[in-house]
Image (tube, rainbow, N blue to C red):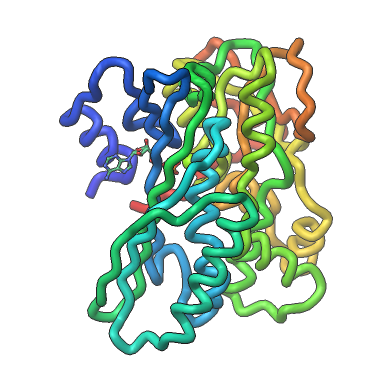
Length: 311
Ligand code: ADP
Ligand code: MG
């Protein structure tokens, strides 16, 4: 296989999308409706051994995260989730208690944000757990924020902190003692909070142009905005919002926070571009600027960052 994005681009070339619909290439498909709204749809898989280690993540956390990563794609368009579908395959040996706890986590995040589970599918699997969630959402017609609307001169902004989730994963994989800043970082990895309210507010703010959520790391995600919008970007690595916990972890274990913030993923924060004149209520950090020149410049570092790739 050539690469995850080449594969997706191949699908995109082979299956043209009907006029008026935003299909492959954004966080959600956007389907216009006749009642003044547009429908948002997205689907994401979580595979044991790839997206989670069954021996470490609790079933509660896995249930929460399965819904959270999907709701985050609705947040990335500035939409409101309407409901979800849950397809799950588990080995026959999986206990009833495990499934109950999984549903408890799924129910708690769905309840917190007020989205019903509307259907799905259940199967046995030869040995591993796989989960596929589909979310539906909506936004007033024409207001969904795409990856393709960044303009030269826009500021590049992010909500929250970047890199915490990837550091949490690093702590899990390296078996770090669960003390000090480590439990916080692992929680950020296992129990992400999609930025639904922030996304909706940004979609209603004049001058906010492009948006997506950070799932593969800024080093990868900013390139999607660049490609879809036909622009370049300059990111000042000294301006990245890094939490005290991430800095402490990196000092203690001799790691570079930029690796977590730019090459790691799963922060599920919002990455957006906005005109310098936009008056933005949502707490955020400006990390760079969109440029006309198509290239990507990392100001303050002589390294390149590519984010996470599946293959
Ligand atoms: P995200 O990280 O936001 O979930 P992805 O990087 O997984 O987005 O996907 C990028 C785009 O490619 C999305 O528009 C998604 O719908 C589309 N896509 C990914 N895999 C496939 C596939 N197997 N078939 C059709 N479209 C796909
Ligand atoms: Mg996304």
